[in-house]
Length: 444
Image 1 (tube, rainbow, N blue to C red):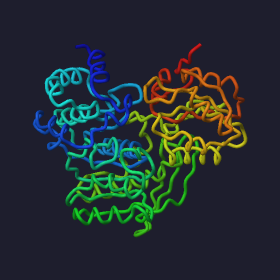
Image 2: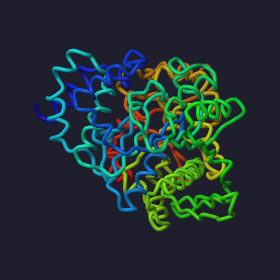
Image 3: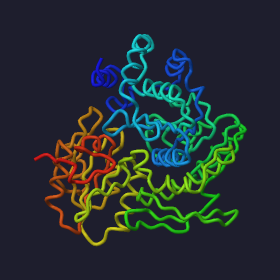
């Protein structure tokens, strides 16, 4: 098979969450265990940092990988979903997985797949573990997909676990209360393995403490270990001062991820780095600061407050649940005044759009669109739901047409915000870590 034929097999023959939703979710670990046993359990040869959470786990994973790479370690990074290129999921030192390996691996496990019927996610997890083991990585940062306890990545025995926060998302699979969701995420906590918790509330704190105690896992709460003293978006960088409560040391950070919400992720990362140093990893201050200042360049991260144009400002963010959208709207209200807001958006069907649409300012202009996936809410349906809530705008079958319409309507002082789903971002033409509208060829 060619590389494209291999990807077609992976996308079309295996149950894929982005296409079929909950039907592709396997609520046990049998398949991934069987797959990895056939491969000789490559995950057992890896030193992993495991990252879970409702929001921020992708950014946190990329930050940690960038810092480890700057510290001189050969660093693997597994994340999901990808935006445009399958190889985004599996990287070593920022470089996407080699195409030949994807082809060879897929050919090798086809017979096994016919027997056990794994999902797309299960196959990509096994592929990542095999690739990282074969390439002899020093450390691997592994982001969970959904949840934690029954996530396919949860067959690893990490050196450190990280849980960023708990919010309402994937409630049909993880539970409809914060304690229930926290219990699923806490499933990544392992026996005697230190765990860092980014944010908690009164409903989730005891869940983590109880699970950590059961597993004899040392637990650190990042928001109790340090406080955010200063945060500002200046000159294309997020300036963030984080003070350690115990020793009073202030880390003055500069991040190339400029969403204000990244300050909380950075605080979690600082606690994680402190934990890794206690385990003996050599991570100098220079590596910490260099990694955080160039996360996008080092790891190729996209879809987190990417400002790709000014006058009018065009910002791309993958915010797709309540907490994520609240953070996006708050930052728009804080930073961009005056000027009119234009929202280009599309959602998938399990995101409860009726609730999400209530979070957007009614006076904004809206451009409703959809990804070309069975899970996507059709743009005409989304427009009708929004209209019933008093939100006005046009709908478009192609996100590039929606962006072009917003650009035509916007003045130089306006802001165009593209959000709602990783999958609509994946259909923006030529969207790369260094994208500008000069490189994104919109539809004529």
